[in-house]
Length: 362
Image (tube, rainbow, N blue to C red):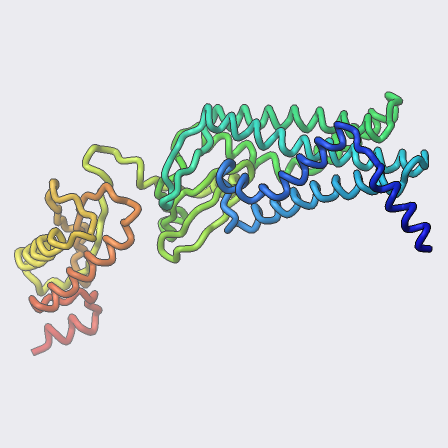
């Protein structure tokens, strides 16, 4: 047994790799080791995202599989033609898939750098897609997929036209049957990018104003949002996002900025002059707080919105260009208005019928 082991080790040490095998082994090993920095610093993919982490793990597993199959094919299978043929086909398929993945990633990265836009989102510089970059990326991915499919068919030995056509036909039927689940999202994503209404880094309101979010990234099938209220990430299908009413707070209608409205219902027992004085005093206090992003170059507007049955609805309008801090500004402004109303004895609670009857009864 020892002699057999010595002979095996001797054969192992004398084994020589071809130049292609050496290049492939070294390339796969380097890519596995450097996969994380490549994903983060070159492709700018956040590893906080579970999808990107899974993609990284699959990529490393593919590279490791190529290395294992190369070693098995070279040292274990040897000159066994049957097994050697299966090993060569397996490694060929892995090489095609591995190469197609990297080719698509590199080409998309180059296209995004050339035709995309560089923006700062959540303190991080991100190269976002545009209509042109997304169209070119789709075209490139489609071409890479076609060439990879042809390569896999050739590696598997389906040289006969009928067999190759049958394989491609099955894949085509599968794509046709599943197009309802992926085609609307791709088309909606292209429409959103082409409309130039939503850009990465914009602050939007969706669900009839129920959620205020920052657009982080628009991808092929979905859009990633940051909920500014709860500080969590939201994933929406592009088709679903297009069905919603979207208010883009970052697209100002004038150079003054975004015109925010705060409404309050105050009883009829308060004089309009006193109510206006309360809001103006609160506005003066707000301007002295540096962390509240209100444009001091434009005065606040106080208007009566509606005269209801039990109270008057007042509207306070102010301008801000820092829409990313809109939630914080709104909350602090309301707090100061509440404090000022308490000091002046003006109730912000909406009067009801019982309160009115009690006030009118001597």
